[in-house]
Image (tube, rainbow, N blue to C red; front, side, top):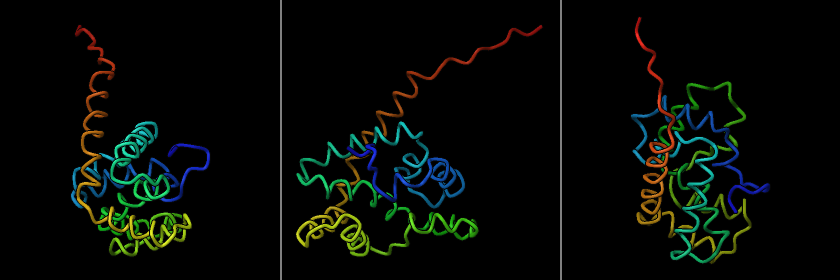
Length: 163
């Protein structure tokens, strides 16, 4: 499970406040799915990644490959925003190891091969999933559902009567 005690590096190793800051400060450099994903709370992020993992089961039965997709694809897609954020926050050296610079799906797959000790076949499967647009599109309805849930469960604001 994605939110388990042995949580993977990268997407879940970065504090949620950093993702939220990237979404806020780098919004124009992010496409809508990344901006939305990076704006989630920690609990919402875990829910989104777990649901995405289940949705990817049809595309890829291998749980290690699905895990690698979930933790690296958002970072790969948001490289421009992440680079900009890191350049403005140079003092945060700790973030560079968990927010790697990736230029293409091949680099991302090779990094995940090392991180999760993927076989050559698993690495090829991962690379194919990282290139496939549908892989990321599976996340869209999940984010929409979380957004709807937020609206339904959002506490009503109290309006103080004017004197």
